[in-house]
Length: 361
Image 1 (cartoon, rainbow, N blue to C red):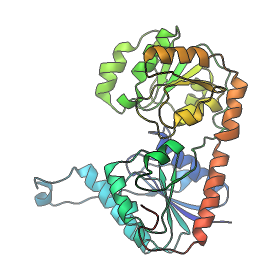
Image 2: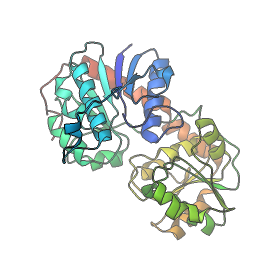
Image 3: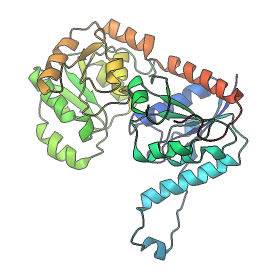
């Protein structure tokens, strides 16, 4: 069944390599796979997104505010106003459109949900994060035809007080994230921010007697300078924000991927990517990571301490790389994820619209 699918992405970061984070990587892989399967996909995303996806720019080309408005003591930051303006304009445009069978909301903004009752077709919202005040409050105004999925059971439980969401676990392209030969070093990948705690990955790797290479965008410069930079040295190297091909080679040539998150990961995409390369994972047991990392594919730390994570690194290094890869191919693949979304899209496209709030509680 060929569908006309509208995907609403983040207006903050472009949907292109190198990805700012897992949300952008998710949106890119889903859109690309749906296009390859013959669906008509229209992606609304930040300027500079991958042109091969045929993305339409979500942010307005120019936001004009008068000097009086800018000087108001209660004026919101211009970036906030731009995002608000962008999503408001998009939702009003979609309210008048008959070009789509289903709308898939992958943004973290409140307006797509709050204005979903205006839409002539049902909207699916994928919950990529735990509840935030803006998004949670918008649930009150969600259209009755709205459908919700969560990227893990942990994320679905976090939202249970606001909405009932089915679970479609994230998936990774196992052809792109191909098996690697392994090596002796640890690797850490992700956004360089306090909640991802790469400084703890360095400490744990050292405690386990292994060197470590770190890669990812620096999203918090002060954290990098205060916590990460002082720890770097011959046995701990930061190599920057890599493109996919470089990242795959790095992860695939490592002994263990360390996931040191200090918040409840909604899913844990970097863990799934590592497993697809055959690289076992050592992680703190936070959020969706508990659902991804098994005894066959890695090791979870017994507690949230550097010593426990170091012990998990040692255990994970003993895993059979072929079994780790099989875990990714069997349960964590992009094909499985898109199959699930296709079925859900088709069901939604056949359902009549309903009044607001029927899907929330």
